[in-house]
Image (tube, rainbow, N blue to C red):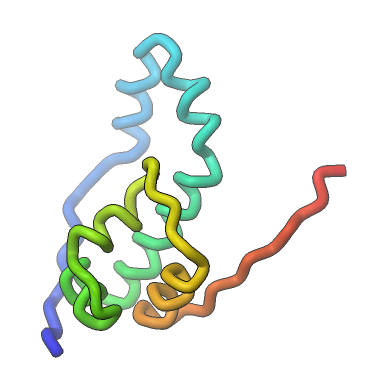
Length: 103
């Protein structure tokens, strides 16, 4: 099993949002994806804390780096609970799913 050192790429999300907010319609579309972005943030944070690369996670899950890349992006891909559970286990976490009343 490959143990690869992970060095995160410097990225300023605040700076990105500041630039992107100038585009018409950006804020509405961004707000509509808030839950997806939060899940992605948690996935990336857990993998970073575990010190793993996408390649290492993919190897441990028995999948490909491109599959992990899709999983870690807020897009059209909708992962199964089984996939999220397996990812969580690989990065040393436990998956929790909750229904929160809106009223």
